[in-house]
Length: 446
Image (cartoon, rainbow, N blue to C red; front, side):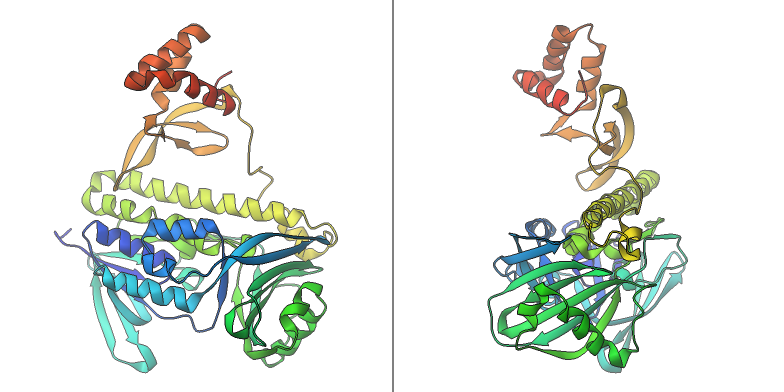
């Protein structure tokens, strides 16, 4: 590998941008190639999303985030209005991310990635300029695939959940206070949002096999008819009219079984895309992207650790996918009125029956060597593995936990165990009682 490797990121959204900024902080030469979304969209984001944007370094993007607005949920006939979310227009978010990238020294190419293929030990990437402009050719030593669900499969094995489609359409109406709503119905669910300027965004999520969608030219009428039957949609449709035609996009959960190689990595929705039900799509996309710079840094600078780096990324992508999928499964299971319909039956039992939060007993707790994130690199260390923490826990408030658990287990009794914990903690020995209480509450010790 040359002294100054060139890393090319395909995709200029939150995931690709987060990887690019992280790599720039590590001193790498980075080029991002991507184009704006072909349709208008707004996303309801939670405070977790803001925390992820902040961790990624998107200060410009954070400045675009509006104040929280009310969110009403009607699910299984029950209505709750206690939640809020921030209605963020994607075009503004993506523009702010681009400004941030350029300000931090990332080369940003606005265009369509026409092709990317291996070339020697690296890649040759062709980027088509806007409106049929010139084609730029990039030589990359490392490739980051961050084009979301639209990313080519590249022949990689993928796990797919129930095939799902979402129909999104913009509406224009009179000015009103921003708000959003969710409502379940017989064969799917709807999300509605009203933003400043009288814009509304109404989306239906349906099962691909059973939706019986009409031809494209009839989709607007189809959506209006379906939405008109929903009580929660009435305030968003009042005095408003559809703008353009609905945009159909897949929202099928997809897991890429092999998300990383020695000179490439997949992040965000290109690595794992889950059901949009939770409203944390950007957070889920950032979850795998934030760890990627350390994985890439290890692959490039410490080839002897490539196996650990690849294992680290793959394990975490799979863990995140199943965690989010199970949360969605449990939410689908809460719908009782339409539980017998095919849409709900397929989703209330997928991906498995494993509980999201599992109880832990001391006999289920083990100490194992696993790949861990150690600063800007992937390393290997002893971690404590439990049913609810299958990836293992290395540190708690800067204290390595495996040596402490081993010290407790090797002590002859509880009194000696607490003394052993104090000795293992060294200068922080006074914290032994609190740590022991935490270990008991976590089910590690009796």
